[in-house]
Image (cartoon, rainbow, N blue to C red; front, side):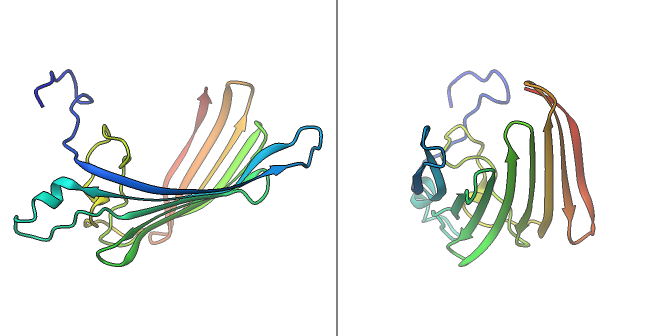
Length: 193
């Protein structure tokens, strides 16, 4: 690019992607309080995939041409008011297998406390994509396109938060590695928002 370079955040990666998605929502009016009915979303589900136009044009190059990204499925289920189950998975259309699956169950009691538990799984030799395929300024991540070499990831996760006032709260998060049978990371702190 011929644009001036001010710092490491400025350069935009070269991208030529066509991204498409299908989003479904299941919502209904919640009339538990007849005086104030409100719209409640029970299910949110999004399927997305990208097509790399540059990869398609370089088919004459040696090696496999794989212009389609992994298919991403994101879902949020809200069966009861304080709970939400988030699911996130990536499916490799070339290898015909799920390469990553994550889930988190979160329960929130008003603005006072939050607790969540979940799991993280990525196949060996699969790197979970980072960034946002929809954002042109997001860093280029080849794992959106194919599975790259990486370790097997099998973690249990847990988090908790407690509000200490309007802008202050305590938070803790843990990642337990099932293979090593040990905590890979323990985070705790005081948050100001």
